[in-house]
Length: 100
Image 1 (cartoon, rainbow, N blue to C red):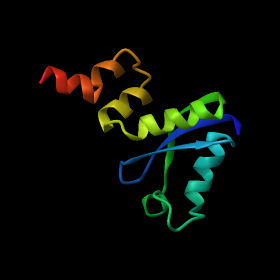
Image 2 (cartoon, rainbow, N blue to C red; image 1 turned 180 degrees about the vertical axis):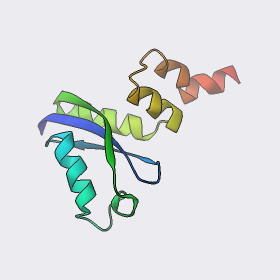
Image 3 (cartoon, rainbow, N blue to C red; image 1 turned 30 degrees about the vertical axis):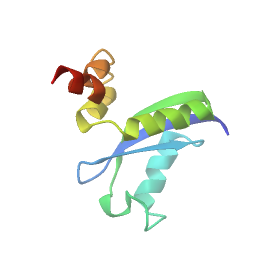
Image 4 (cartoon, helix red, strand yellow; image 1 turned 90 degrees about the vertical axis):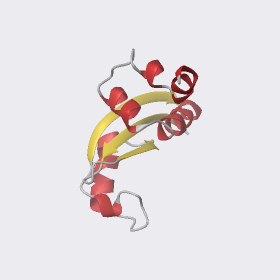
């Protein structure tokens, strides 16, 4: 798997879902909104709106990024959506624990 996107949608309930796809993020947004899989996280949280995406040439980098983002706090995800890259290291859970 090469040439991937990591994307984030905001659900109707305000939650965020992060995923990885070989299709365009806009196609995935549409698929989430169609509710193709009743077991999917987004199924009962529709409609969803694409709020962030990034292209990766390598699938392994995309999957690693997706997993990393899924572990982030809501505040850190929102900083990423705003593309406030300088704030991201300051919102690290490990860094906050050290300062506490």
